[in-house]
Image 1 (cartoon, one colour):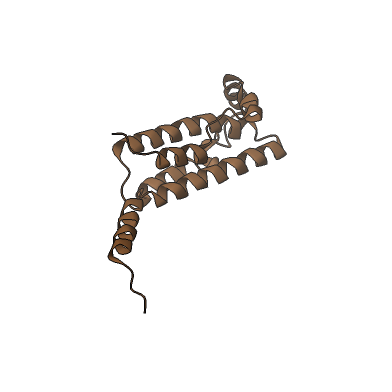
Image 2 (tube, one colour):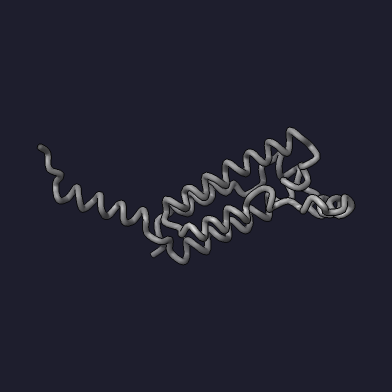
Length: 143
């Protein structure tokens, strides 16, 4: 029967502890800032594309996949489930669009105020929350 070496056991335990460790304050601040920016970037895209079937489906699908990846990475990095649940609710596409009973004139005003939403979508000048969160979580801690 094989016995794992003490070094192997220690490395495994330390890696598991580090993977489940709470994120630092700096990491939390950076990640929450990314979520705020991403939600601000994507809300107009989700709202203003709603009347364009295929475009709306593409934007919603891309946002949802990116968002789910960021939340999964955060779970692995040790974020508390209540914080993840709050972000999951706040970043749900249906939570990010204007309410369905918003008068159409107000929707038009909102989309005009965010007039470059279509350009942002076609040039992809929006925060890719999945990629951005992964980069912050994988960055070495600041000294």
